[in-house]
Amino acid sequence: MLAVAPKGIPKAYFAHGNATTACQIIQDPVEARFKFCEDVKMLPDDNGAGGQLLLSCDPGRLQWNPVLGFMTDPTPRGDLWIYSYGVDGQSELRKITLVGFPSTATFHSLGVDTFPDPSGGLRIFATNLGAEKATVELFHLADPRAAEPVATHIATVWHPGFMSPNAIAAVSPTSFYVTQDHRWPARMFGPHLSLFETVTKIPGGIVALVVFDEANGRVTKITNQASVSFANGISISPDGKTVAVASSTESNVYLYERDMTTNVLRYRTRVHVPQHADNLDYAGDGTLYVAGHPYLLSLLEVAKGTPEAVSPSWVTSITAATEAQFLDAGANSLEYQKSWDETFGDAQAPFPHHMRTTIGREHVVKTVYQSDGSVDGGYGGSSSVIVDKKRGFVFISGLYERGLLQCKIEG
Image 1 (cartoon, rainbow, N blue to C red):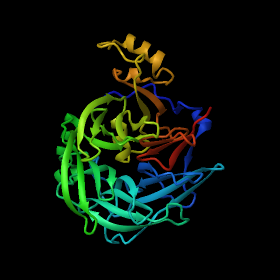
Image 2 (cartoon, helix red, strand yellow):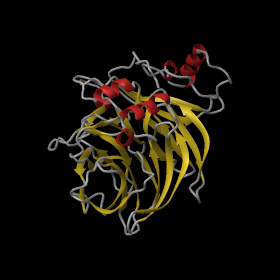
Image 3 (cartoon, helix red, strand yellow):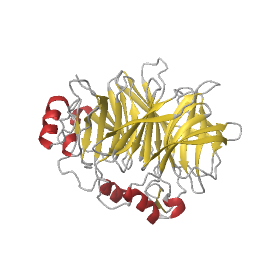
Image 4 (cartoon, rainbow, N blue to C red):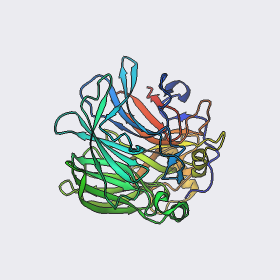
């Protein structure tokens, strides 16, 4: 775990423009519920002029966050939202109405993903850390562009092996990868054992492949594909051949080769990043974007509800190194890495990558956004990132932030 708080992180830095003018926080002027969004996914392009995002938000996160061990009141429900953007500068935020989901059930979603539904529209997969047990909830979203979107509950998927499901990546209408961040989650084993697992970086988290029967939600097959310390975000590359998994405590992104027929994963390599990686997402061109927390202790203070506490943000991109960018083996001196960063890497950032961690040989890591989390002009606790290069936008969600950060790529 990174133990030293970075001192050089600015109020706000955006690699593709002036953070003050290019970035704005999207908020709901009517409902104050649009806050504390954990995951964001871009909805499939339906040839509409504008893009659309699906967001998983939980205004009750301060009262119920089993991942970090804060569990006082599970009653307030979380929400799913759709954000439309990019049509003549106009944008629209719409909360999804959940139909058929039991009124007595708690809903605290972390990861979300979608897959084309056989009957049309989209199937939403949402992990749910409920009061009684952890599940994956399935919904059918018939029309993502409806003025008042409705998602009909299909089934609740549960298995005794669902210890602490976090992020999810759908691979078919009835199968998905799901990360489980702890082997000994606080909601089942108490905060001390969970904290021990986090601090010692025991690889108790897993990446599971789950196949289920949509008629009743019964899991027909579950296999452990990988063991990862604090397994968090997961994303499948555009060509479907690579699966990326974030390890929050190790500050690593693991890359796995995916068998397109069996969905079996095989470890390929890992990339060290300068932040505690949270969620990640592949853009259409294959660039992998990673959101995370440069100082975990600050995040914990915010999660505890400490007055005036803020948590910094750090978002990075990962691309494969070209032959010219490939580092010499063993070139780990700070001077060498600083020189490499100035030539190929992250030197433009106020707090460059090489100041926090060793630069890897096979991949280039660059800063996209940094912020100290200041209330005035900053944005803290970056948990997810989506980059829409087609329309020229970067979107960042904050685990304990109000609203969604939207940055326009300039130039």
